[in-house]
Image 1 (tube, rainbow, N blue to C red):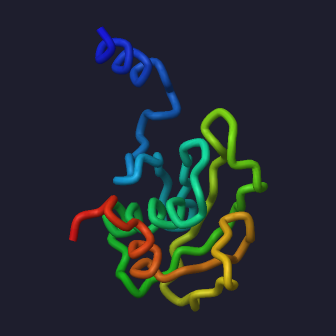
Image 2 (image 1 turned 45 degrees about the horizontal axis):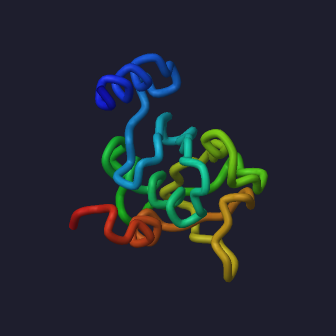
Length: 126
């Protein structure tokens, strides 16, 4: 019965159509200039960068040396229904640019795809 309820919920949610599920559970969609991560409530910046980079590698054919750059930052509200979306772009020419603390609430925050994938921890294989 519980499986049926979960399946019905997934089918009834139009936002999930066409989205790709990252290994850490965040939904991701878009193209190289508009990657959109739909984080789960309570998600932190490392997990969001992980989802964007994994999507870039798996769906967009990015190289590990390419860079994911925050284009539409999160306002800072972490808790609530579904969190907030965070926009990224894939930029092969951009240099990584981040402060001491990684924040998806700062436009221009950038990590190499390889570095962002390293933030996935046990959520990815190989």
